[in-house]
Length: 635
Image 1 (cartoon, rainbow, N blue to C red):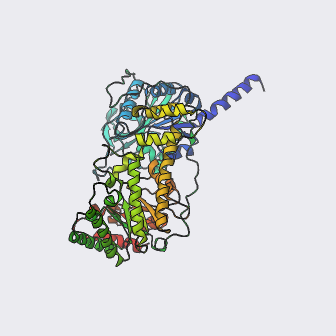
Image 2 (cartoon, rainbow, N blue to C red):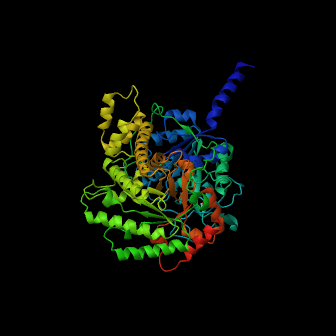
Image 3 (cartoon, rainbow, N blue to C red):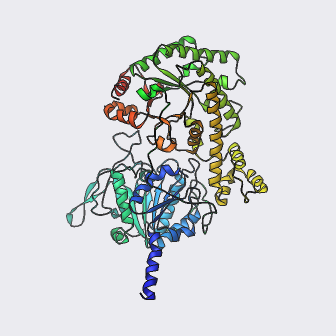
């Protein structure tokens, strides 16, 4: 073989790996398990999907290593996250010049306005002729529920012939040419074209593409990309075809090309744009993780579980139960209990989950003795009333109740020592009470309500910062002087300091360990009061954030899995070996799907929960409770 032929072979071999690589960056620093559905169609189409969580910015080295970059926009300024910067926009432009593919997953409406604004500025700068709208497209049938939308595939990827698919919440994309539309939402219209012929015009554009320079730019909602990996779904089939299509540049020829460029103006946006220039490579110690590889199914907890859970499954009703507060009269509390037990009986519930309103006992500062005595008496009332039924009671400590007037203004820090002391005290009081009612109270727990939503992002508040810096792993680069300097970094500079120094991953692990250790101490103390006592966590959102994952890991032991009540069907995959009760939407029951729901809640999960009762069971009608009873009978 000639030298020229050998050279050609080596060049092809060198370029081939890049053609199969996709770099996924998420400005929200989402847990890898949550992005596997996003990566799965691209993995199935032949891409190796790498996720670099702890440096969500482009570097010059990425240009040589990857052919496709997918950027999922963050939540700033609506919530804590990273955002695109000047260096990212420069690398994206060079990416298309080199013939690469850019997939922009913008955050739909609400939070994330900075990244949407920056994506629009970059799209205008490149002449892509695509603009992300400012509002979300919603279904006309259920306009108040922000439902999943059903885009009708238009003329993108000609002749593919896909059925409508759920694409999540999307903002309308404004395109200058209908040929840029890959998928649309809403009914199509027929308009009169040249020669008096009717031409099909799609509805509002949801996914669009443009040829820019030598490359391709695809724009979609990150919600559409997030939901693309449900195996066998129309969404998964569409995005797998889209991923394969991006590997065949010859098929881009029918996609319109970019138009005239505009000036890049980065002032006047929702927040300041970081002027950070692109690095040559990610900071030392920052690595990418391969996504979408096959995972083993998470095993369910085995022997040693309470018999009523294994036989019946959890059928829980959750309530804040404000009548439990010490200032409520005995008569009013008894009336509320009677109403509640009536619902429990009609619905055949076997578990009552309530806020225990434990604040007077968890923190006696500023509390009168009468409050503590009244709360203990109220607990005895509930126990006595439920003792006559087959319903068990799961009392919860709610951090929202443990903040006092003297606390620092603003949301509490998730590693605040005072708050953790109150949580531990409240759990200890409940555990002692549970020890005297072992037949009635199988577990005590912690309620992570909406007031703790801010804890889902990586924390940089003072208490978390000091705990995280103190727990960083010891190695030669982290000298005592450097740790002292890090501890003194002001709040506004903490994230950027860790990002550029490559310590973000180690800090994330450090604060996670701190929560896990505190949770383990609480669980150990609870089981010291009663050996068989379980510990529960109620979280009315997905438990995919760092705090919930760390809390549940700390509360769980091999012989005593935590009970988790959440609305996310992937909870066991996210959290590991736990007892999981999935939250049911009343509309799922009223739609007449109890036969379909029974296998879901009792085979794939360990039961279900409904609540809060104050908003679910309103009025005199008990039809919903009867539907719940029917569901339990069809197990």
